[in-house]
Image (cartoon, rainbow, N blue to C red):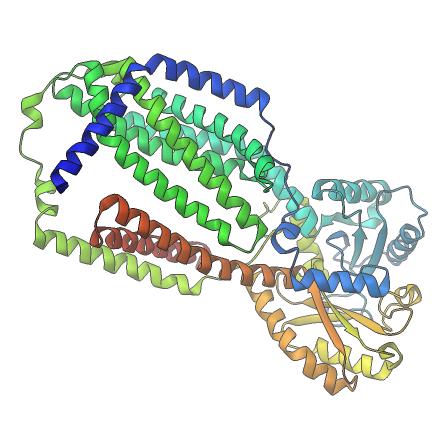
Length: 605
């Protein structure tokens, strides 16, 4: 079979498909309406949101350190929730004492609260000598039931604070920490996600309306996107249960945005084809058939390529990313099926009315006119070469900035300034140091290590002198904590330190500081005279460091798989080699430029 005959065979195949879709136009419209209603009513919803930190790094060494600490001491040291009290002119000594006694009462179960523990910490000169100010701030780290959600843990802390800190002398600022920050993020997202979705829909529909100078065209697009969204959300919940993978409700905004993008693009393809065929003089049904036959192959190839690229996320080691892969691939495939069936059916029903109020009249002579000056310019080799060179140079220059990308997990920093969580973090930072709301835990394990008090004091002093460390709290500094065995285990075979960094926790600078500290700890332990010990390092910043390292490795793995899969698909679909390489190179260059510009815009300013 010659290439020409193969192409003719494919053309007949796609035209045959178009004939079937146009013939079944009313059946398809009613069928998709029924499918949308059925999935909404009968299919299970998407899984509930997970606690992000656990989903991202449940197997991280930081969690292992916290679990080992709990096993050795039977009491956690790290808390991700804290009550902040601060008076810049100086905290009332009685209020400071009450905070300490309140923590003792919580630990003894004397308060009617869902909280299970508390560790109060004041910025006295003895406890935190490197603090920028003293006797101004009290931080009470709280422990809630870890099996409950971020929202429930935060609510328990806020209810406790509202019940206990009622006097002006208490100088209560707010409840802060990584868990309240995530809860606040969730509430902000839940509050504004529908506003963002509506704004995005209006923006997309405006683009379609301006493109075709029509009101009916964006309405057709909206119907198609709506059907795809409703069906996808329902099918995603069922697919998650069937495949035993986590497709959580957190993905809903991403699914909606992805469907808006791909379905709108494909609708524009089809509507452009319909308008061209109508202007050529074809009747309503034939114009719909020809447009469908012309653009369905392009739309199918584009969607399958995108779906394959998103499905490559399944090679990631992160459970969260692995959940993204099937969910996003399913989203694109559902969008494809809706687009290549519902949109042609609606075009066949509406015909010229798809461009109302603008009339579409037959203009075959106009369509055969010479192309525009711009079209002629960019399709000649010399101008085309200059344009390509300019694009490559510009995009390449922007892409070079991507090497300065600093990754972090700034939960608190992403909140509005008026947020009580952000204000609490700011107050804690002013009284102690930026890293106080998410400190780092260092556990030293060895037989009898808790008996060597002089060596432990030397190690604490050395840790406090490390670059980027604002302060260290450990054995011998807090009498009440020592009495409870917070820093030295009952067997004296383990000790632990609370290390506070001088930079914002979970951000790039703090992560860099922590990595340097991790490298230094073995030599510091040896210099202090503790001999051979086992060290564990935990905390949010340690966790963020592991997450970012794993994410970077995952991105490299995903990129290689996605590029390979897309190259193979493009070679098969286009039956060529140069064009697929050109397309992939353009994609990589555009992605690099996007990352580089993001660095300039958001890190540089």
